[in-house]
Length: 214
View 1 (tube, one colour):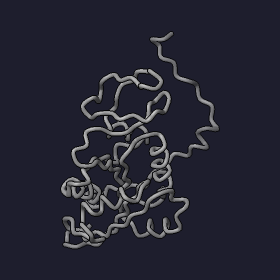
View 2 (view 1 turned 180 degrees about the vertical axis):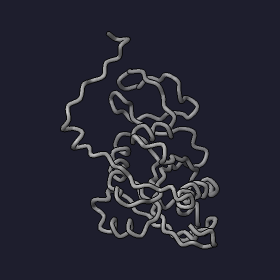
View 3 (view 1 turned 120 degrees about the vertical axis):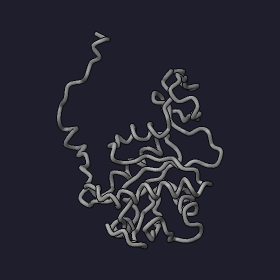
């Protein structure tokens, strides 16, 4: 990649809710759809909702050199929608990709679902790693870190960065964009291998048993 100024690049912000994408764009570039970040003149586009129902999906992806998948909450319903967006990305086209958790100003907790009953819960950042109990089903579990929880739930490879930004802080949003653009600068973008879940489910594999429980 050339180091000359103003390399033009299109970045697509994908999210479940349109306001999440708009908040990111506003944090980075105000009311403009373009901004300059380092050596790049970036055009930011926003798409929200189920990509399978959006006629503009393919056209936007053809233009994009990088994709940011944005989310605010990590409850089961939201995660299922984020997984759908992630799985719809092309596996045969190299592009920069990053996951971004968007937080509001002074927000010190996040929404997730109980791993046992699915009850939506608020979890404080400071409680990550502690044992908690769901008020609904009374089951105890280890409270996760938000970023690590998102990575685990989507089974993301280490090559895909997972970042957290403050929607009211332009610096954190810009740093997320810089992280994405750094993938273009390094030239280390690879095609996604993509997991063929149908093939996997057709295979029969032996359940793993913890030796300590036998």
